[in-house]
Amino acid sequence: MRERLFDLGLWLLLCVPVLLRSDPNDGGSWAQVAVGIVVLGGCVAVSRRWPLAPIAVTVAASLPATLELFTPSYSLALVAFGYLAGRRQEHTRGALWLFGAVAAAGLLLTRITATSLGQWFTLLLALALAIVAPWLIGRYVRQYDRLVHSGWELADRMEREQAAVADRERLRERSRIAGDMHDSLGHDLALIAVRAGALEVDPALGPDQQHAAGELRRAAADATARLRDVIGVLRQPDEDPAPTAPGGEPVEELVARARASGLAVTLTVTGTGREPDGMAGWALHRVVQEALTNAAKHAPGGGVDVRVDAGAERVAVDVVSGPGTTGSPLASGGTGLVGLDERVRLAGGVLSHGPTPDGGFAVRATLPRRTPAGAPTATPSRTVLSPTSARELDRVRRQVRKGLAQAIWIPLALLAALGLLMAGVALWTQHQSYLEPDDYDHMRIGQTLTAITEAEDLPEHPLDGPPKGVPAEPPGMDECRYYRSTLLAAVPVYRLCFVDGHLADKAEVR
Image (cartoon, rainbow, N blue to C red):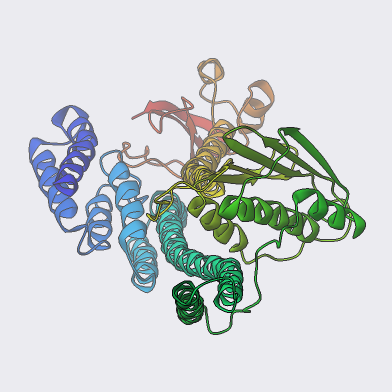
């Protein structure tokens, strides 16, 4: 439906010059108006299937009116069909053949009608400006749209691949969390088994109590074995089975070790100062550890500020790194923060990260002191401080709009400048053959050409010949010269005829 409305609007627009310039008031006829409207309608109807056909038909309708091709009735149609052909045509070979055929047809008609080659040069100029230039603009817009479309397809595919990588990283993080649970719970179950074994051989207990203690020891051992089997299934084949839990290391010791390794890091602790327990404590340790590792890798030489606010119910940690000052940042796979986000989410917290206004990077997490019952298992909705994808999308959209504006307005501005230059050259050329009316009135029959040249400001360059349709020259004249009587019109002209070097006839002819 939209395409039909566009074609209808285009047809109505192209019919306006035909109605204004081909009616009887401008030397045409209503038959010419009807033929032009029908021809333009057919051209618009077939322009989508055969983009070059409307150009050929419009050129064929323009050449009978003038060999210069650029006619008031069909000039707009030439520009429009030239652009649409470049926009819709897949290959360029047919268009090049058509342009060459139009130039050859113009030369052939020039020779057949015995007109000057100046009209053929004008036809070539009109062909370049009215057809070829819009066609090139249409080709550029087509290629640019295709490039943008391909880029967005690639970006969409990369986004899906990145989402798959993120899902795999979340699963890996969950398996590492399961390993942490195995190390912690296995240690506790082992202690229970040891204590139950001691009770089993305690002589102070009766047989029933010793038997119950033995059952407890065996149950703890069986639970430890089943836990090991389950965690072994959850682990990735290439995953290091070493525990990832902090092993009781507080944030102060982690920061101290980073500072001892050469990283400029400061620690600020407010609130109660007590870190959360269980998974929340491990998540807090991992947030600080991952942020310090990223700062050392991607911003070498920059300072890092670690702030921990230990409240009564929740613990907030901010790790802000400044821009690097030495070396070059290392490449990153982008999955460390994904796994970190999964660990914080499963601990009941919220993680956010993104660049800072000064060029650094900030990682922020808020964790409960204890992991709530029924931790979330749904897909997380992360809060990013500065969404890089949104900024990139906005930047690409601005570039697309800027590129389209350049593709449209810059060629139009060049065409306008070229048109003004051509108009200036044409006026200057016409001025060289322009005879002032006062000078014409002062000329007298019988004056010699030398006297006229000395007395009057006679132009140095008369017209190449008489304009079409002027009356025949008087008989017996040796030479007749034609000069423009106005700058902007081809007729009327002044005709000066000489016999033996004397002015024998002067007239204003139409």
